[in-house]
Image 1 (cartoon, one colour):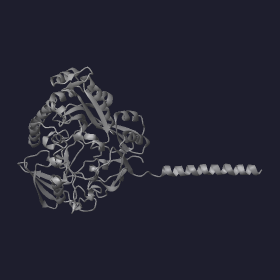
Image 2 (cartoon, one colour):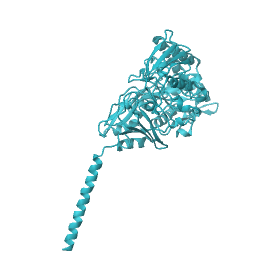
Image 3 (tube, rainbow, N blue to C red):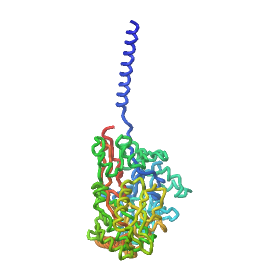
Image 4 (cartoon, rainbow, N blue to C red):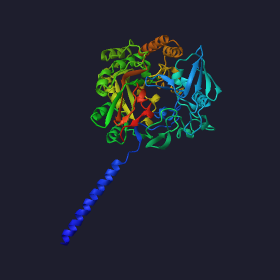
Length: 524
């Protein structure tokens, strides 16, 4: 009898535990999830000062006089309005009143002037300096208006004025490059800095006094995940809500019911940068030979899985594209003829030599970028067909400097004015060895320089187009890169997110978060 009572009590206790467990689970399920967005960031940032380093947080933390809309046209943002003098040299801006930085201080004309002057100050080594060298003077009219006078008419200036505005008061008695601001930024964007857990994540929180659309999502967390496979796995598990995917990952996650795949058009190309400091690349016929030996169609089909298109020019996605520019179609025989003419002769071992020097070099590539690694390996293997012994060095970003490599798989491109990501990449005065520019290959071509100078200063659209079309023609004849492919930006996104507005994106899919303050959760 006692055993039956004990058995009854045991069964009753187990049932009570089960019911209790179910109740707790139901309570947990009923509890609303935190209103936050977790973005899988491919890398961590050195700092958050937008005139020293460009990050995908800029549009969240900061705002400029102008901003790009969904058609990539520059429209007013912090500027209420502006006028242009008849000679196109003086721009008078009136700012919106009542705009405050995240610390509550008013944003004024002095902050805008301070930001541009800081960009032009050589001691700050801003990567944006080349964008503002045509600025002649800046004059404060009153607290909410100022005049910007140019040395010459410069049509791209409105694009350049999308640059984030810094608070002058935050840098009092501070060196720009070492200021505390760089790790605890103060902006006027829809989100403000919350905390930075170095090596793990960075958290932003909604700014209630933002002058535009009040953010619906309370927190945006950038989780640093350099491994692309880990990013894909955490997107699948729901640990992150957004991740930039490679083509293979995108195809494998297509069937996931909670993930939407967005393949977005970009002006973002990949190519092999030739380091002109290396003797091998000084001969234009050698560079042309490798351009002909690159099978772009197969790369788009096999590596990009169709998420892209072959590249031949840095302005291929621009209205100034020169469709007649010389294209390096895959042609091994033509490549071999060029190498023969350059004095590189094939020997019995199948490789080419010149004055006992073997035709050999190394392509360096960031190890965390699977697409670039695959491109490097595929092209290196393909170059054997023309007698070149090419190695691939897939390294961590901290293990190399681009301008010291033999060759590098580059990633660039811009959907904005034609001056953007052309002058700073291909003009000789933008060499990374002598300036803060991005001419890592130390490329120098007098005609290219002249055409870039002409294109940025012309005011007539048709004349500008002619200059940039000639620039593309000259660049094809004297290639600084082996342009390979334009890549789509493939984002995996939690399907419960809405408000995402797609537009043509820049390099590394930059610009995707441009309207994040309008995003919201449908369910949470």
